[in-house]
Length: 371
Image (cartoon, rainbow, N blue to C red; front, side, top):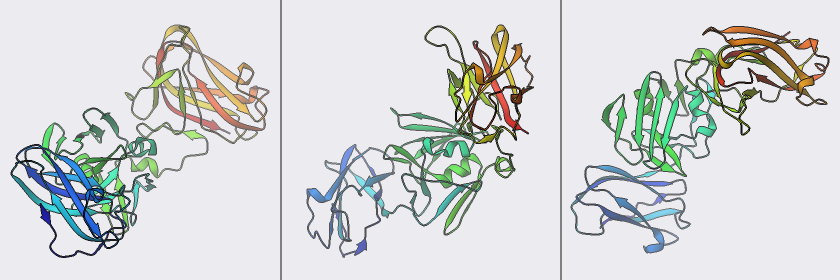
């Protein structure tokens, strides 16, 4: 065992992890005991266990915040690095606190977190939660393998693969040894972002109270987009549009792309629906859609559906344009004159675009409400 000889008297109210860097000659179990001023003896109730792998130096992150006695002032720490015969070496022991002192942004857009970032002496661990939009802001594509606890990130023509609790990352096909090892917290990958941004070749600035990431797509964040204009220029960002009976297709950059999905009755009806809107029908009389598409039907009809406070989406609240089987590999702009529909009045609360009723694929460059 290894113990602190002198009382450290450390305030642990904000410490969530103990990081231990060590190696062992055999697979084993490590146990860490602690005591505080309020609980001055070490026992099983004030301990943590983690599995130790055989081999080279690794970082082990032990989550401590879920022990209700981990509070107040730490007065002692004991590490039993192995539970059976083994050679071992401990390089360092660190107490980690979540970072609530910095703000984080991508191209000026603030990031929010369910799990706070964690600062270490070498890097910052950021939680990667797809539901919070971080991959869209980075224009990144990711793959997560739950079984192997591996995450792959693709952005800016670079590829990085992390395996949780492994000190080896793969950057563009080459193994790289990590100084800061990724891990899981509450099911979310905690990734060392300075290493990641360097690997993806993103620029960043790390100030005392802020951390800012700049990607090559920053020009799209700074442009002024007119109201109810959806440009779909950021990779993976649907701008609030949702898909129906179709799945996303990322193969055409700068578009909202999708592929038809067959319905239970064997038919096809792909559609995309806008977020909630407050379009003044008196001010906006046209909807313009620019898209490229292919379908498996000789002739098609593209439609814009809309709804208001008093009218639901139906054939009565739709404007149609006949289109061909495909756009022959080119983007074509279609203008829907909404003002010709007598139901187009008052406030339009949502619109829907149906490119065709067939098996096929489509890529929308933009959808714009015009005056």
